[in-house]
Image 1 (cartoon, rainbow, N blue to C red):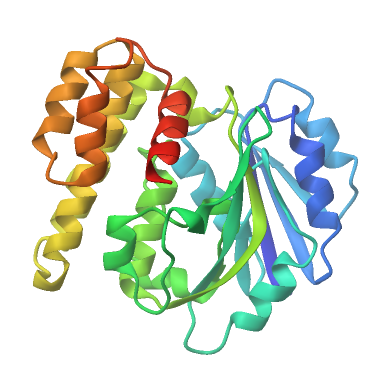
Image 2 (cartoon, rainbow, N blue to C red; image 1 turned 60 degrees about the horizontal axis):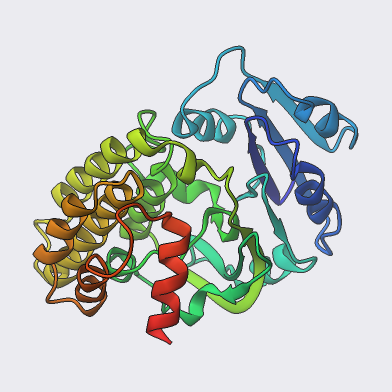
Length: 304
């Protein structure tokens, strides 16, 4: 039984796949297996994965599932004590697994790392510069700020059984946010400030491609988490911020589709929060159609 089962979910990921898999094979901690779940790719992803030999266990779906279902299917194929994820367009630093393994003790259910975010212009920043991490029981903290990218997390496999349901098979864009939020509600965590993961933002990121699906999934996520958290009085303020942040994503999608007036109405609803006030004011200055990545860059500059 390997210590780590590394799940690589792939759907036509040939462009960046070798870079990601190379970063696994450079790990200083060597007790791992890779569960490569090919979600019915039509490119050369299969050939690339199989070229690494038997340490990559290759599985192919005959149909294309939602990412939530594909994640769930991959978990069922793992044999390791811990589960880690690496998305095909991200990479790890060589000592990522070694550091995470050292942070697990019997009380810890999952460990995550700081992440270097790099855009397609080569600009980089550490995630924790803008999103404050937390450890222990962090459900309330995660409601307020999404500071755990999927490729940065490692989870004790037995801790997943604490969840009533693993991944939501109806979700793709928001399946990881939903899963990690629910995990944080029942588990305890630790983290490292070191950037052990690098996430790349580019035009082919799923979140920039499926604009119509994003409206449905964001509303679905909001409804589910509100139902889970509404009975917990100590998370009331955090839940209000979570709702505002989900609405912000919905508004950004409207703006990205050229519907700035709809976006403005949503920003106005939450303008008691500084970021939403800034976004509300920006709708009077910036164009009617605005790329979400460009808007994120503007917000980061304002927050500095």
